[in-house]
Each structure stands twice: as C-alpha cells, then as structure tokens.
Amino acid sequence: MVNPVINLNYSNNLTTNLMLILLFFVLLFLFLSAFFSGSETSLTSSSKAKIHKLRMEGNVGAEKIGKLMDNKERLITTILLGNTFVNVAISALVTTIIIELFGNNEQAIYLTTFFLTVVILIFGEVLPKSYALNNPEKLALVVAPIFIFVVKILYPFTYLVEKLVRFFTKIFRIQNHQMSNLVQGLDAIRGALELHHEQGEVVKEDKDMLGGILDLEHIEVSEIMKHRRDIEIANIKLPTKDFIDKILKSPHSRIPVYENTPDNIIGVMHTKSLMRAVNSNESGNLENIDLKPVLNTAYFIPETTTLKEQLLAFRSKKYHLALVVDEYGTLMGLLTLEDILEEIVGNIEDETDIKHHMIEEKEDGTFIVQGNINIRDLNREMSWDLPTEEANTIAGLLIYNTEMIPAVGQVFNFFGFRFEVLKKKKNQILKVKISPPTEEALD
Image 1 (cartoon, helix red, strand yellow):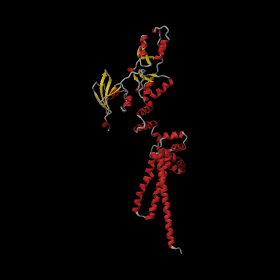
Image 2 (image 1 turned 90 degrees about the vertical axis):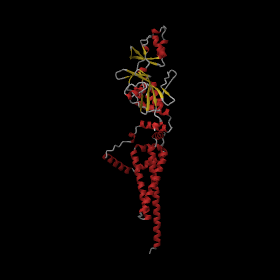
Image 3 (image 1 turned 60 degrees about the vertical axis):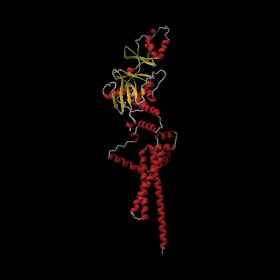
Image 4 (image 1 turned 120 degrees about the vertical axis):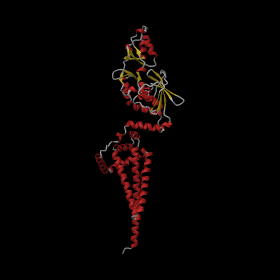
C-alpha cells in the first residue's frame, strides 16, 4: 500500500517544478518579445547612408542588414510573426500558472491580465524600442546575423502569411507599394537637411548650398537669367576706338555684340581676344582692326532649359555665357556659368564687380529692396519663403498679385508680408519696402 503522505509530497514537488519551468519560459518569451521589438525598430530606423558606408568598408554585419532590407516585407512579417507568437505564449503560460495557483478566480485573472499587459508594454515594447531608437545602427549590426537565421527558420510560416496578405490586398484593392517609392530620394535628402538645420547640426550656408544643388533640375534659366534690359551689349557699327573703349571699360570679360538691332546678336567679344587683336595690329591704327573675325560664336539656349541641363552643357561645350531666347527666337536675357554657381554657393563677387545694394535693412526691422531683385536670392538671403512660381522678381510678384502696375505709395499685404512701392520709373518698379511677418504673427 502506497503511503498517501509520500504521494502528496511527490505531487507538490511536481507542481513546484512545473511552475518553475513555466516561469522560466515566461521570462524567456518576455526576452524574445523585447528582442523582436528592439530588432524591428533598429533595423527599420537605421540610417541607410551609414549602413551603406559600412557595407562599402566591408562590414559583415552591415552586409547582412542589406540582405535583410532587400526583402523588407519578409523581414517585417518574420518579426511580427515571432513577436505575436511569444506574446500569446506569455499570456497562455501566465494564465496556466494563475489557474494552477488560484483556480478559476476571476479577480486574480483580471489583476494578472492587467499586470501582464503592463509588463509586456514596458519590458517587451517600450524599453527595447527606446534603446533601439537611441542606438539603431549599433543594435542592428548585432541582431542582423541572428535574423538571417530566424528568417530562414520561419520562412514556411512567413510565406503563408505573405500569400494571405496579398490575397486580401487584391480583394480590398489595396495598393502594395514599396516604401522606397513612397519617399523619393531627393525629398528625403531635403527633409534631412531641414531637420539637421533645425537641430543646429547643419549651418544655413551648408543647407543652402546642398539645397541649391538639388534645385538645379527644377529651375529654368528664365528664372535666374539677367533680363535683356539689364544686359550690357556693344554695337559692332561703332567706331573701332569707341567699341574697344566700351569693351575695356566694362566690368565683364565677355560682351554680346549686335549689328543694326539689339536682337541681331552676331557674336560675343572676349576682352582677351580683343587685346590680342590690338597688340597684333602693327599699323597702330585701331580703325584697321577687323572686329568680326575676333568675335566668338554666340551660344543661344531656350528659356525652358533647366539649370542642371545648362550646367552640363556649359561643361561639355566649354562655354561660359549663353544668350536666352524664347520660342520665337527673341532675345530674352543672358545667363553665365557664374549665375548657376551662385545658385549653389550664393553671391560671388570679385574686384571688378559693381556693388549694388539690393537689400537695405532699416532700424525699424523693414527692408528696402530693388524691384528687380530675384525672389530666390531674397529668400536665400533672408530665410523667407516668398513664392517663386508665378514671378521671378519682387516687382513681378507685386504686379502678378495685384493684377495691375502699382503706383508709388501703394501698400499691399501678401503671404504675411507688407509691401510698399517706394520708387518707379514709368511702368518699372524700382524700390519696394518690405515688412516681414512679426514673431507674434507667425505664432
């Protein structure tokens, strides 16, 4: 006959051992829950640029991250599948332990459910994700080799899940775009520049310079060219001495030359070419110099050409100056290589430039600007955000928005700014007073 006391002790020992085993698995699954959560955050929030740099340096972990991110959908499915499994397992095991200890006590089950939710939230989600957000690349390099193995192990299950997901996306007509298509590379770079500038990690000059490079393919030459009214040109019909004096007195090294009418550009005179012609004139009489053979070929471009296209054209054709024409061949303006470079690095001045005070700040916080100042230059200089879609200059912006030619003294309010016309010459707006938005208005 078996001693009942021995059977009772054996049963108690078995229950205790079972509880310890179940508790061990609860802690193990809680660790796995933290592992999956932290891995998801680290792998998806790691800097692509940093990981790419490490891959180029031959880092094995970075190479494995690259392989995982090549099929991001499968990676995410694997992580969610694993995380869901371990969280459900934790709930099942804890419920088993509570029932074993307290029976079907509803109050104990409710309290345990609440406590378990808090534990999983803190230790299985918030803490690992917080660590991963602060150390994304560091953690990703550690977990990537492990996940290469996990993805292979769980592939049969993830394959079924992917098929089910695709089936339901077709039923509900959900577009299944890759994330790389949602955010274009250039937009991501612009966003990163703005973010790092706001955080003080990128200075304004660097942000403007990098942003200028990205903008080249979106800006047409007509937006930054010097208008034909402001172009310095020379008439080939002038007496030779007067023509030479005009060219040599100019602050520019290249001057467009016309014959009969300004629209009839026949070439571009380079000061070096002209000086060589003068020096080689043995007679000493300047009127004996034939100027036409000295001219360089004029280079014409359509006004719809983008700055990126024109920069590449300048480089390939070895030109520094282009004459901009409209669809009818009418001269509209002039563009130089320096104009394009200034869109990237800002204003470039040398000892021969004539200084024009385009922006004058007043003590009351207002600004006096020239009517022909380019809006893009003004935005860059003042960190403003005036629109550039419909007009290239401040004068053009006022005329477009008022639908008239404003008179001197008229005041207008657009885009949070106050504009007052200070000076005109016939229909041309020469000076405008601008009052930018106050901090209270911005708030």
